[in-house]
Length: 279
Image (cartoon, rainbow, N blue to C red; front, side, top):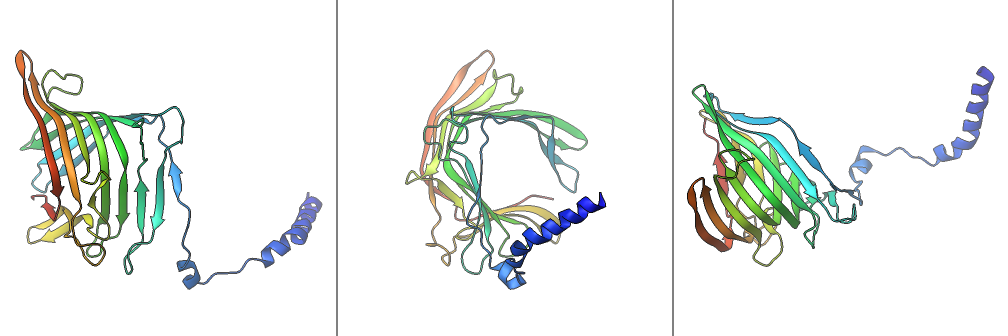
């Protein structure tokens, strides 16, 4: 055993030495200058998920909002990995931190369709009440994506989002996901930029969004916001989007359907958003 180990070490010293000689240690400054050129592609072909997990937000006063029992599944085209998601770490504008970019599939033919559902409820004064379910059918993303980085000021997560999507049906069902006899139903929801490209709702440099905790005289509170457009890193204008709903209706047992028809917003911009959850 000892002779075999000695022979192995001698062979390694003979054949591995040239490879070791070709390696050089890198200083911290050299390592910090390394930039990747390749990303990671991943496919969710045939993805399905369901469970009893619950996500809650509870205020210091004890009232709460929760969502639970998530379900998600995706139908695909017959060619796995033909139109994957892509994850890259990209350089941002000069002076800003690099950011993570997740690009959605182009999905030109609309083959990738999501089916989603979750339940939600509220709690206050010791009483927890279920409020029903939200059911999404045939959600289709056409490009766009998400960006994540560190905020320019304060702590938290800065992010960007671009969306071009169609939803076959969005239903709010107070009797649960399996009972659609009473519901508010939005059929044919279409969101995109006015130019037909994905609507850039937020951008990590030109108009960053943020999720963090801000502290004021009453203590810390959850904060979600989108900053003003920053002309230093863009044209200083908020991106314009379009929202179309083909039909809005209300259904209830024993009652005629209330049909509100269609709704359209030809051009909408988010100039600034500041949401602070109440204590």
